[in-house]
Length: 142
Image (cartoon, rainbow, N blue to C red; front, side, top):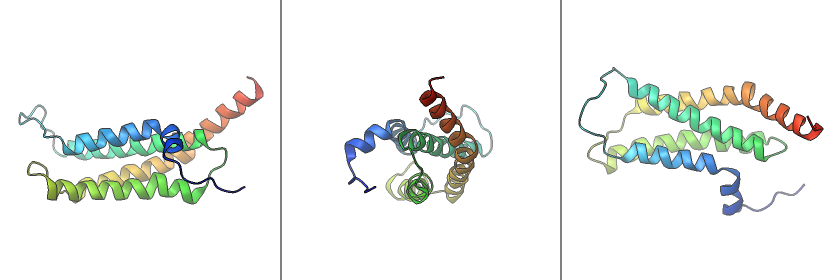
């Protein structure tokens, strides 16, 4: 089967939640946080970075599995692992160079990447079997 050329409209239709999560991450990465310390827990932001990227990549995986009948390992690896890690690195560099109120923190990048890797295993062992079972049940009329 021949691959169809890339279409922005088709991409938006296949990955609407992923694109919303990207927009939310961009907003959260560049907005100026309030000056008040509401909760002061050491390194809580690292947990937030892990959760943002684990959630983001889980949504990408889910939308990929949902919209494709077969899994192209290279394509999905690039889309759901490599691209988010690069995205996280670019955001960290941009925070350090383009804002006066945010700094570049390589530990944030590391926790972003750990979240991406976590999502890889979550997708393989939880999401993919769930989507396959759901599609089988839908196709069999259950």
